[in-house]
Image (cartoon, rainbow, N blue to C red):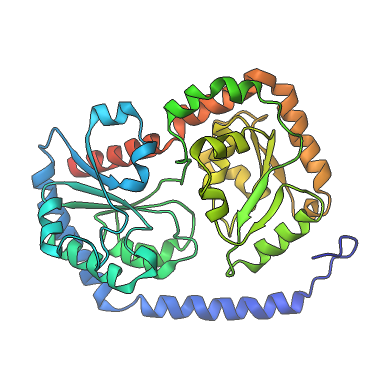
Length: 372
């Protein structure tokens, strides 16, 4: 990784690993041939038809969301739907209400949950409680919005199996997850640190901030993604504001305003995804007026369609070693766009990519599904 002059590639290793990857894939295919998956789909179709008769005439939808999203929801969405919030540890065995009390609370509601809730703090018992609630809450419509389907396949499989509609954030493991749910849709992850009112209140700062030309790119360290860590370690040798954090506490312990002003203090933001995902930080950069610098493969991501060509910059693998030029291109784009560019990027997210936008889209899918 440190040798930028020579390309040290062992094609034989890549070829041999291709066979190993294929063996693992065929093992997955073999596992998914069991009749249980066929009967799961039969069960879910029957459940869906029963729920459909209950919800198709419902005019005032009663939506339940994670409390994690409470401060990120727009007033407009709250005016359209009846929305209540549940604790992130709602599925935990230590939760203050019994399973039966939780089932009673969910009666007649649409539970739209993010992927962090069913496996609260990595607990298997939380996953079991989640499954129990799904199987026994016959008058609650479960919609899973999975932000981690690219790397926690066990949790994603359970979420997909226990969702009446399953929304995945990333293009990953489509075959495996298709065995668990026929009604699945791609809904990209999004910014959720600040709601639209916070951005509007801070618009003067975001427009007039004396922004640094240095790229911002602090990422939390995850041991599973060693290649990502090598890329960030390489970049950190040249750039003071790019690197790895041992955990996210040093960032999330800051206030909302401190975090917003940190993002708004830089013109450009270097993004290194964990795998092939479209991370939330892409939209964090845009909503604070900055330009995200993204790996080349994201050029074709449909979730980024409609953005102005001055609003993102892209890098190739080789440019990890020549990152100054990439950052310079991005800074030039920022400077060329000026104030109108900042406003255009902020408006693009407020119009199309906030948490409320995504939830509204998911509920459109729900309404279309039960009326079809």
